[in-house]
Image 1 (cartoon, helix red, strand yellow):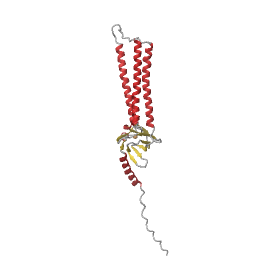
Image 2 (cartoon, protein in one colour; image 1 turned 30 degrees about the vertical axis):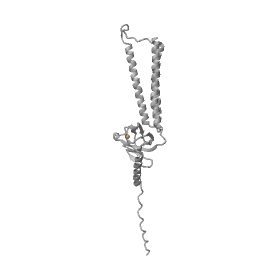
Image 3 (spheres, helix red, strand yellow; image 1 turned 135 degrees about the vertical axis):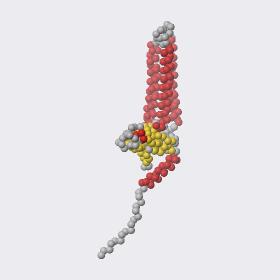
Image 4 (cartoon, protein in one colour; image 1 turned 90 degrees about the horizontal axis):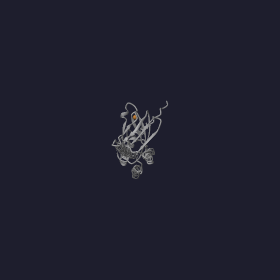
Length: 265
Ligand SMILES: [Cu+2]
């Protein structure tokens, strides 16, 4: 009878746990999806991270409680000098093995599935993006906008527009890392790689090289400056004017009056 009661308790606990682990992240993900139409990989990354921390904390507490209970239950006491545990029925024994495996494996697989979904978010570039070329080199980040404007170590972007960087390198391996946007991708010679991020509000973010590329690697840093759309437009207008002045052809020299033809003598 005791075995049966324990068996039922385990079953109830397992069902409750499975429900908890499977629904809490689903609420979180559902809420996030409803909040924004354009995906925000950085926010999704944080959600998944919190979910993993939440899961392993609960699992850790659970393991600690169960372990403490086993230690208490198998203590030495009068009539049980060796601290033998309560014998289990075959059904209970199987339950103690199968149910925890089911619960923890389902959490693992669920988290892994969410990881794949997140990976797809990082690789699927939204259609309303702005594409900027990036050439990395020892030791700078050189950005080229679609209209030909170029910047070095400073990428100015409008808030609310997803940004795609198409990257290559002119010398060795570098890795364009923007910690705030949770993105990092290698740039390498002879290959074009990409990353994208969604700058939702104005601000400044650090860029750093995450691939040891030479003695000045530690100085290979830059900034992403996110401006409000109208400020960005004003900045871009200024850059376009500057570019136009730089690339304007030199005015042709004024035509010289034709020399009078030498008189034949
Ligand atoms: Cu580098």
